Length: 50
Image (cartoon, rainbow, N blue to C red):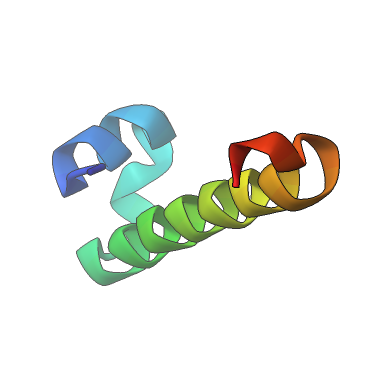
């Protein structure tokens, strides 16, 4: 999982503009996007994975 420290590192010098809660929300959103992309791939592109 992306920790707050890792998110701050990824955002760079502008990370001080964001609260820890905002960074964790972005982390959750990224995981949700990755999950949805994989589900789409499984169902529509390579259904043999199901």
